[in-house]
Length: 474
Image (cartoon, rainbow, N blue to C red; front, top):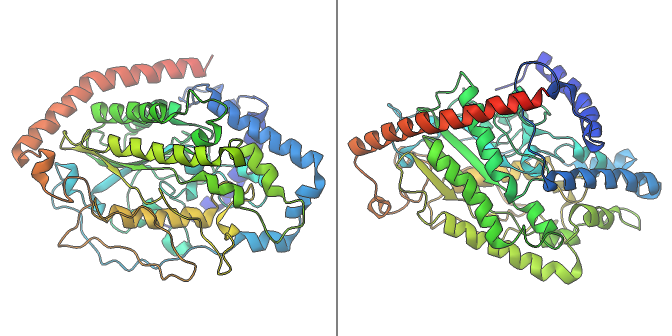
């Protein structure tokens, strides 16, 4: 759905304001919007992970002040244009597919058009840091509107390839997509509750916040609307494991994500959760802008953004990424398939993904933000393209190394009348293996689940909302 000219101007003005907010955040100033007014404003609970992220931003600012020769690598238009690159444009040629004639009662018969609400949990990648950035310091600005799993800025024809913009071909009124460049939990952020710097330790807080936002939104029928939620976390865990070894083990990673998924299972009706593993960050060390002069800025930024990405630690870092993935496999091995209106699906395609390369074998740095670490807008567009295709691939056939060649023709997978559903563990094979009940029993289970959510989740979550509102005004 296109954004009108007034909306575009608003987004531009907001982008300027965000730079001020980011600067205030670095020095610890609380934005006025969270200090006054009666409307609840979500501030993520203080944690070491977010503090680490803000410290990294300060380090980058100081580095560029101390080393103008490094900053100069981004001060001429030719370099910025080379790195910006073109958008990834894939014409959407899938045939129309109507939503279900009546709302599905199981998560395993949900068509794309049945999805009415979309949400996302994660870190700075899901928050859109680095998207459209033209200099390292601009990576501190969040561009949630073009985040791959949750962005709703403009539309596919206007070169914004995101999961919500694909889904709008089947349901133009989808709720929750982010718009513009906004901090977490403003109206335009939609249901993108990702917090820059967060790790597995923040997933339960984000899960609670996402459900609160859904409950508070009068446009959402919390108990009957079908929801698609994507969780993507682990980059900061892998980059900080050597500094905080007890917090970022594979077991800790498992526990942090399990806490969030358990909250969803117990309190979120009618939902499909995409669980997406973190890619191998050990390769980041080799990503450098080859067409710049020495000394190259990238190694300095790598040392700040991913301090455990050092030669002597690369093997351990890569092994930890694989161990994280094994834990995700355990989390999606039927644990969340015993409630018919809720499921968690592992989308494994980034486990062995190799970053995009040029014909000469060098990394295509137009897929990387100017901090040589975060994904650029092109990478986000490819992430969305890949996730959509993997969602429409049966469990058991999903790729583990979805790597797209520089000359490869891109085509969307399309749902069909023969199989119109988003693939889950249960509809990819024998439904009886998941213990699926009859349609009548599923309806009863859903009603019981809604009763449980009403009695427990409404009281607990709304009490939490009231407490947060009071604290925000202190």
